[in-house]
Length: 299
Ligand SMILES: [Zn+2]
Image (cartoon, rainbow, N blue to C red):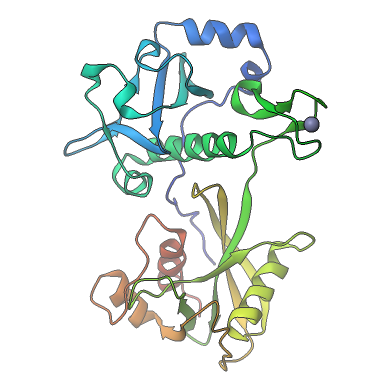
């Protein structure tokens, strides 16, 4: 069996999200005023970091951040409050010394626990920026619960940040796994198949449906491996293996340009960068999925 729970990209956030503070307006004001409060700044959803050999989040002071910037509470690091704000980097104070890093790159280059904070901040801020109006009555909404809700000013309906579950899976059979390439993927790049979970289905059903729709593969038992937040904009990737009943594929050409049954040796070579296809990078849970498969004693 797959004994270890693998660490996946954008996980390992060490902040205490301190939900009790979100609901307490007075406590939140006190948190913002503390001398050890700091802000992660996102410029167009990309983090401002200290560049260099080992980049890290640039934690800005409250006075660095424009007064009217959208600001959310992330949690506490020990005692120290941590927030995130949306602001153009060039509107921060002049000697700020930070640089804007693409969020995907940040996921790969920042320490894992900091990349996880970027994921939290990015998904929540993006949601606020796209949910200015109430889905019930069309009225204006305002930020509530320190950033973990929006409330409609007209009908008082509350709205909460969404997480979109996506299943990502390897169909496996007799020492082979099925991988594929979508039309937007780079040439030679092959990865696990994936798709959004639909309303009214279980994860297992979503895995089986996607494999059947995209590749015509019928699968039986589904085994969960691990999950990963994917903040583009707010997916939760749920990785699984599915036991295929046969090898014959029928391609959905709108979804995929190619599918291929590969052996463990072929995947090992690809993960090492010497294969005849390009494997997903370590940041992506598809990498974890492939690595777990080749390292497991299972077919
Ligand atoms: Zn409303």
